[in-house]
Length: 162
Image (cartoon, rainbow, N blue to C red; front, side, top):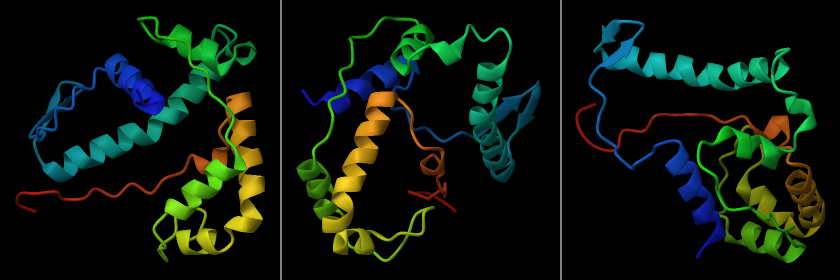
């Protein structure tokens, strides 16, 4: 079984994600019911923008159960209601990083970092070793670089009336 799939199965189980993708026609927030789709989208956007901020505030709170002294795996273990199998994250090799880079579609569009996949593919022989080091350091420390936590979220219409 694919280890990544197992990890996501656990995450989805714990977050009660059932794969249900029904449209949300109304949303109740603080006793107020919203039915305008734009207002619903704005409410979700506002919520998701504050999630990381709220987590950071809880971690820095005086009664945060000493989160600074726990490892990321200990933090996850304490966060879930049901125990889950131990995760052993293995370090990645330069060959694996090169294989991933080669599998990317060569596009000119960029992410938050401003680097296109086309540029990554062209320079893979120069960057695969440093990328391997960064990935392994992140896996071993349990720390994901802050600058890589940014994302551009764009809602895409899959079907139905705009």
